Length: 420
Image (tube, rainbow, N blue to C red; front, side, top):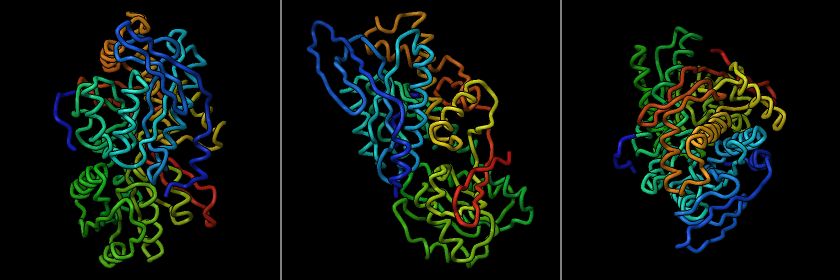
């Protein structure tokens, strides 16, 4: 990762379901003689910490994702995946006999929430690394804080351009939008070879959506299609009548939406209610089963590219899929799989590091530095398939898919059906 300067709804029933999960524990960082201990308490752990301390007890890993706001439709899936990883890897012995302990901080849906969560995890909870935040927009503001503190970051869903370039301690397990997004447009063309005219919608206040729409618009041009309009909205919007009407009047054959689950779902619903009958492609922010309760039966047919498939072969995905379906009675979504994979990377990197230098003997700053190096050096067989990292922290992943939402007429029990 280059040392570059960084560029600066929720449905309560779903949230309540996803908040349930694995149990608790304690972890400490033993202070050096020149530092008095400072004990803090939050909803997941009790930590006695000093910056120059060593670990004693469970190894604390920070999880900084959106548990509130409209972004919680994505963040709660990440909470679910992370908790399943904690339970699974601790059942396998943790880090060579030492358990891990996830320390959760809610980033909410904005930059300030992510900054506060990162500062708390780094300075108060003394975690060895962080999984988060949920949004790329948040990453551009919060990741530099971890970079300055030399705390490893694994972005579970930060797919915008230039995330790894934020700094040496920033990596991601989520493949960049430039790789994933074109798959869904190509799938739409495969279903309807007569597509000629395309309308694009995107959330102009969200860094990821702005990055993603650039890829979608370039893909449209690369495929020889006509881009008839680009309509902007805000992630906080609920009324899309004006933008939807403007686009429909141009008679597009395909509509592409880059936004989040709540706004994107409402936009899909209103497009259908206004009479649009063509194919719709949704971006990664719509890639959650929580969208089904927003647009209900009108979600039917939406195409979304995927970096994860529940059918992916492999022992770890089989275990993850079973644990998720046992707990939540549905197939695991991409955001849960990516969060699980991020925790897995930390665990396996810690296991490898511990064999060379006992992690509970290393001072916290040295542990964080050595862990960061180990993360980038490893390869990991995750639910996403085998992944690794480039020297700058970009994920290397081979397998990608496209799913299409299938909904019954009554809008109940919808699902993502994989077509590639």
